Image (cartoon, rainbow, N blue to C red; front, side, top):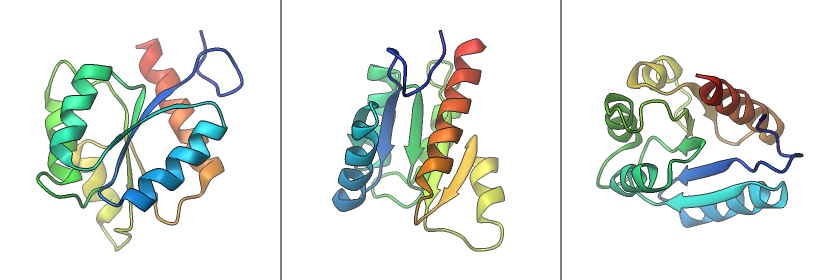
Amino acid sequence: MTCTRNESFKLRVLIADDYETNRDLLTRRLARRGYDVLQAADGETVIAMAVMHSPDVILMDMSMPKMSGWEATSYLKSSPVTRDIPVIAVTSHSMAGDRERALAAGCDAYASKPIDLPGLLDRMESLAQHAAAV
């Protein structure tokens, strides 16, 4: 089974961002393309939802309250229950070294805001296919 937006299998995507506007905008864009979308507004909720719903991919804002995306990603990647869920850092952190810091925290990919949606979709699907094959 492949994981593409044009087939019957719908990727379940967990969007983690503390700004409701960002979550809603991305949710609408993904839902229009057939993705099943979940939302979380902080790092603690991301972890709980990842355990409960086993999303195919997590889009992680790195600056969130309660627990940052950096901390949440590290936690997710250290847990046997969630470590295989691909995490894409989706962040406005675009200074030198931020990409490397996100990858060091355990993110599988990095996308800076504003989001290049076609590129993000390709990365999401590629990572989800790879994770499903493992």
